[in-house]
Length: 132
Image (cartoon, rainbow, N blue to C red; front, side, top):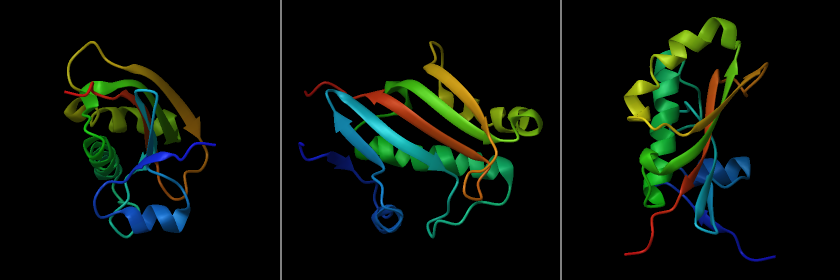
């Protein structure tokens, strides 16, 4: 197996190593980003729902930036929500702050019962920019 081309955002490598996963992998012109949650630097969740969603997007943007991407390069999004029936509208008020303009990426939203103490998680696939 080839060595994985891992992308680490600044300042969070210890958190990923402790939890034994890579924040993102570059492969065949794409960036596959692990699910990002609204965790503080120490890994604990933001308690307020919209703040947690904003932090998840900020954590996602840090991974994208470390790979030379922005959210504009994202082609596929999967979001996971605990109790989406009661939280979807509140969470989706945050999305336009980060989503940008149409055309939007493909999206799959999944309701789950548990996210390790979090209410929202976002994972994406982005097209890596062409080398200059």
